[in-house]
Image 1 (cartoon, rainbow, N blue to C red):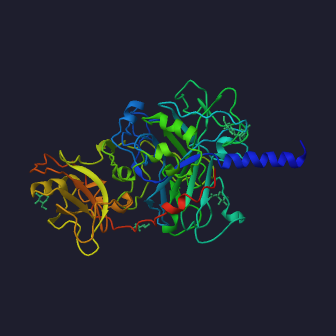
Image 2 (spheres, rainbow, N blue to C red):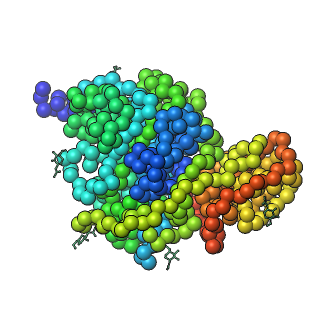
Length: 494
Ligand SMILES: *[C@@H]1O[C@H](CO)[C@@H](O)[C@H](O)[C@H]1NC(C)=O
Ligand SMILES: *[C@@H]1O[C@H](CO)[C@@H](O)[C@H](O)[C@H]1NC(C)=O
Ligand SMILES: *[C@@H]1O[C@H](CO)[C@@H](O)[C@H](O)[C@H]1NC(C)=O
Ligand SMILES: *[C@@H]1O[C@H](CO)[C@@H](O)[C@H](O)[C@H]1NC(C)=O
Ligand SMILES: *[C@@H]1O[C@H](CO)[C@@H](O)[C@H](O)[C@H]1NC(C)=O
């Protein structure tokens, strides 16, 4: 082959791979943020806090059956009860406190064959795997596993093409990222064909040889699965940049080498993934271009999905800055060994939310009316507010709709007034913690967490779950700018 022919060949292969069929579940919201990791630390409190996306069945001990029996999922495909998790991102104030950042995730499913154009198959039922390494203290440029963890610095108002200060890199940026810093993890796509997991949770999987996202599968791991890629977005631009150590993961990592990602396959209908592989030639990110997925996708169900089982009973920063990271996770700046601490008490588990009374269902987050309240039948506020209390209060008054707003307010009605409607808005607009339960959200500023019961009847709530409420309600943080139109266009780092 002549040099130019070889070059053209390489270009073609590269183009084919970049254009490979893929869909993105963009701007996916966490289903829960807590110190659990059923892959690495089953049954117990895990080492550090995780942001978990996808199925609501996530729990300390779970398997494929638990996952597929999730009530709901925060991805837009209701049949995708998988869980996707990473260490949580914190902003570190110069005064040493840690602020838990509001985050989102873009989840990519790529039909990405190797350079031999081999056959891609869906994830087997119950597959679990990891990318990245919580203990990694360096970057090895020739390791596919290290290459698979990377960062992008987002600035939608300026073009930094060709500027090395803004190029994708293996660790945190050393300057502000106005529209967010994106932590990226590309999972190994080659499977040994036999094991759904392995003792180190890694050796049943392998990266393609020579290129973590496009190479050939090794003989030991011959089955080429779909490729899975996470973009975890931290809204760094909402916090001042204070030099090295401005950002931290929940494991104490202030450099970025220790980012890692977990996945449990919980698709209830694996044929949907086969359809993506076989019958979505035009899918370049948008699920609407994959007929099988377009037919089932449900953004409203994703927005209404609420985690309802147990979490770890500790303050992870949902109500404001915390002085230490939960667990033994001392700050690590990339130099020397990672610091250790002595024995710490281990917290117990607690119900994440008070279950809604019988007959009531969560609809999701809706906007207040434009010229007055959305629900005008009755209004109540109090330090005992949860979504269950709001529902019970409206039920007692005979109303079908109940809306919890801004932490401690509750509105009731039978219809929507003043320009309001039942159309849901992004769930992150409803992120104010409930006055009586730190772990649960009760709407937001000018946004209601809506509940509905077509046949309300008076209810006695037997007990409120006993969770210490914060000393003072948190002040509302401004919601991050809507980026749903942008994530789709910005797909570097694959
Ligand atoms: C530390 O900074 C945070 C803001 O990041 C602020 O909310 C908190 O009150 C400060 N704490 C102290 C003790 O100064
Ligand atoms: C790869 O193989 C598929 C069928 O297995 C075929 O449709 C496609 O054209 C091939 N692509 C390339 C770039 O050879
Ligand atoms: C870096 O990675 C390569 C490829 O995996 C490996 O052969 C090599 O031993 C690694 N180097 C170090 C210093 O770990
Ligand atoms: C590591 O130590 C060196 C030398 O003390 C220092 O210049 C550098 O800033 C440190 N690295 C980080 C990430 O703090
Ligand atoms: C909530 O507290 C108010 C007083 O602030 C009380 O009237 C009401 O009964 C309480 N509701 C429930 C369901 O406990």
